Length: 210
Image (cartoon, rainbow, N blue to C red; front, side, top):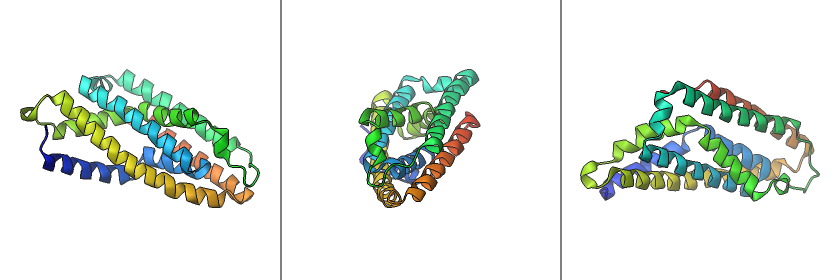
């Protein structure tokens, strides 16, 4: 078992990383503003499920494949970029809903949850980041490294849940206020679409280096 001070240091670092502007927390902010607090929390749950996949990839050594294979890295990031462009198209083409009729009701819980999973899993940069970040805190003298990696991944997920759910709650309140105005809804959709396009470009042009 890792020393308590090491776990606390890792948790603080994880909280700071979760608060730093990045594709995932921006995605949560956009979805919460568009569809409400519930949507943001469900998307966050999906993103954290994706982090379980990335943690497993690091623990099992799969993440090294994306760092070593340009083809695998490129294929996954292109899939992710195309998905973001699809979400951008949905945002740009959305019609204004009737005032008081929340658009969150048009997306099921499973749809929102899947959005988070797809957004996270199709970003190979997360696996490569975990491959560089998690092992720094693993100490072979304190037990099996694989178990330590899973424990560190769990702590990172806890930090992510705290930060991203806070973002979802705040952005959801702002979105609910803006959605009272049909014109504001149009601008909000266009802004979200622009954010998705930006995230798609960022992902498509990413390289395997941290």
